[in-house]
Image (tube, rainbow, N blue to C red; front, side):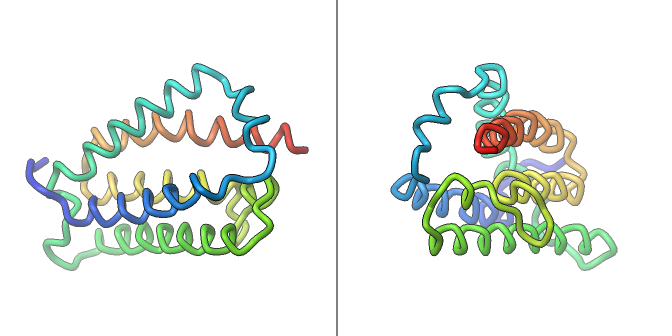
Length: 156
């Protein structure tokens, strides 16, 4: 693991945070009703994971493209997941912005808004051979996907 700035990590974070900032002004109908019921332990996992993933993804140069190799396929798949994540958001912003729209799937990937970035960052950690990011994204995934799974169950 090599310390330094990761432009790939920055690109991923921009792809993650820009739609979320826009979303904060376009919450789904009745969202407040569901937030009240969030599991506090899952919320703690999510917050700790968010901080760790945000920091770790930009402080290691291991995520930058150094040479094209078989490992590059993992980075490409990871990036394609982030592109799907952007498509998910475009679709949400064009929708009626209901809770059902928020927890929709894309290409058969359930809870796309929660699952795609977690998988993308997990693959980024694998590509960079960075155990710290891998552990951090697992922590985030437990909280983030867990919370959204509970929301989806409430909707049903």
